[in-house]
Length: 367
Length: 251
Image 1 (cartoon, chains in turn red, cyan):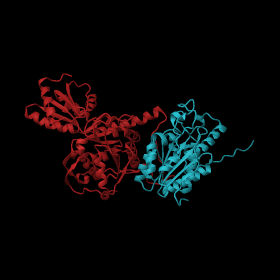
Image 2: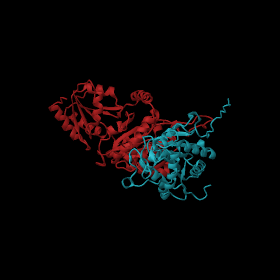
Image 3: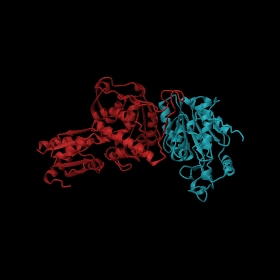
């Protein structure tokens, strides 16, 4: 057990990376495995600084491959363990993330997106959306929360542990360096004070009981001999995933009920979109926002309903339509025309969106 | 007619009797190595606190071979999974079991860093001088001149560099005060078993252990019995069989 630092509601002015470390502690996380890469470093800096008080564990590994796999080792030992990464680190950690999918290991990872491809820029992008949802050589049996600010970072980091340990799919908090490096006021709280009970961890290897007396030895494998044998396992995972999706999918609507132009955005871009919606409404333009919070799985029914109500859709991202691609697949059959504002690796401001929506009023989208 | 005497095979307690006969290719050294390892675990009576990790490649076939809590991981990744485990469970004795490809090529960064950090675990690299499971390609330890699928005319060291000497490398960077580093061979099973015993005892004492096991692969080597052990004898000349590091006081 670790010592929880936040015992009562405490308002602090923190960077997002600091918030994530506090949130992991509030969630009773016992171990962090990590490797330096910008812009997520301060998560482990904060975690390490707090160690004398929390009495949690930390290992600085040799690379993200190791950070991912050693996190899996810690989880198999029954610890609520996690890691964090970004950009190229997220790329090479896919190996471990795939193993977590295959073996249903409750892996938790904070991804603070930076620009890509490859080294690119170090602070901001939304270009790891697809990678985080569908990376690895599998089917994307993952749960991804996309946060839009510091309170989200705190709330969803706590939630990520419970989601992972409840459903046993790898679970992510997907943010970016803007959120990680920026300071904002945030309310830290003990999850118990909000009625949140942490899902107890279980020990996969060297758990209770003696081998040969109380139980058989545990043999976990990551390999299958026959194609059909694998498909049987994956079919059961898909069934679990579909059932879970209904319980886990989250979204936020902002003035979307009567919106004629519906902006679809996730993460920090959704925050710009809120500002734009207010400004556009003041100008008499009925704009609204649909923000998927879980970008995998998507809240499909509310998404389709909101899109059906609108006259036009605007997809906007700091990427070239990575979310849009995932969303459009779920909108099959709907005919609402859409336009796009994609800025690869660059922030989208409220002004950008106001200008874009105004142009859509003048010359409506036809696609 | 002579009476057929049926005796149950004498399996170590830490070997999984349910698996039955060896799952490895005929003549493979993994069965010998795993039996020696299981016997060493039995001798130290540490079955209940040992966590066994195996790689992919031929070593993955050991995923249910031992009567130990086991996780079969991914190519080269057994080492981080096991030290991730033993960092989180201070009572566990971790074993990462892999081949020369997993240990010295795709997972070499983990071997180097686990050694330098003195992770509390035993790393076993079974060296049969080729990638067996994938069909016999050159590995870091392929002998000079040895024919493999990717060196069909023999390993040319002027192109590929010389074979990697794992135990020497590990010994050079390990902390001598707490590391046990040895090279052993499947041609001397008793010695192999006692080497594992020392290695595991050292881990139980909080140290880091590395054992390279010179092993045989008649299938990919395309050798008969005589030639197989002839080849092993050549390997034993090239790769010195000895204890490189033994912490003071390790019995």
